[in-house]
Amino acid sequence: MEKAEQTILHDEGSVISIILPTRGRTDGALQDSIASLLDNATNPAKVEIMLGVDEDDKESVDWVNDKAADFVKKWGCACKAKIFQPLGYEQLNVYVNLLCHSSTGNWLFLWNDDALMQTKGWDEVVQSYDGQFKCLAPKDNHDHPFAIFPLIPADWFTLCDAWSINAQNDTWVSVIARMNGIFERIDIEILHDRADLTGGNDDQTFADRKYMEGNPQDPKDFNHPQMQQARMHHASKIDWFLKKMGVHNTPSPFEQFLSGDVNPFDDVNKHNPKGAGQFGSINKPQEEFPSNKPRLDDDTKITL
Image 1 (tube, rainbow, N blue to C red):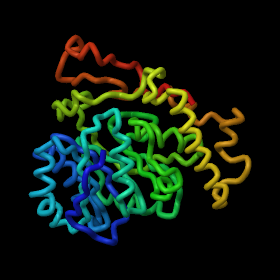
Image 2: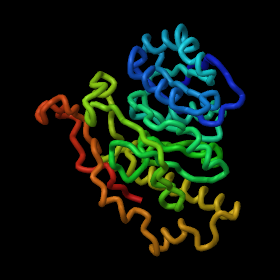
Image 3: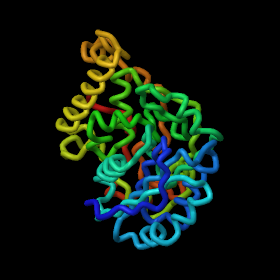
């Protein structure tokens, strides 16, 4: 599991923590991704980069040890790295949870090493929601009804003691937020430069990814009964907190969802998500998609 932590540079004033597991992309995509965040931030010193790398990924470990400090220095931001025993995509939530645990930000921002920030002053947009308990959903090139790059307040992680217990980290918090009426699309644009969307980053990291959704008999699947139960448990904690803080009254959005009076997912089928449940790059014809990785028609189908 977790092996070690290295603090590259630290700034006590960090308020937005970038949760960023990465593998095999430090020479190009990772640096471009981090630079897009920091170049477009009004105050990059208020951003904290949290990197998770595998111990067998020598390229990434060497970059963390030898180059990362110099890379982020010009922005004056905080940057930490955790070295893990390789867990793979099936346990991506473990990387995310441990990085969140070591973060210091008021907001936790789930990020990818193939994502590029497009919005100038994005950090000010996020900070305009300070004090609000919401799941913030930036816009992206997926047209997905959920947040591909969600932000949650650090109090959410503290309350639930986890971001997610499933590898589908983005869907996990999006579903919980919708059930509680705290999902909000915000005016931030992100380009997901992924092989099945843009043709970019068509590499081994892309080929190795695995969706933990579509086989509810698998205990690790998003829709396995134990996962459903755990998700509802997280949602009920959020509901309790929002009522205790006076944000919601009874009947709360979650209670109305449970009673069937409100369906927070009624707009899901109006979307046509790009790249949803797909494994193949747009650079390859359909028949070249790996046969052992079936394409799912739609990864927005969820069981609650």
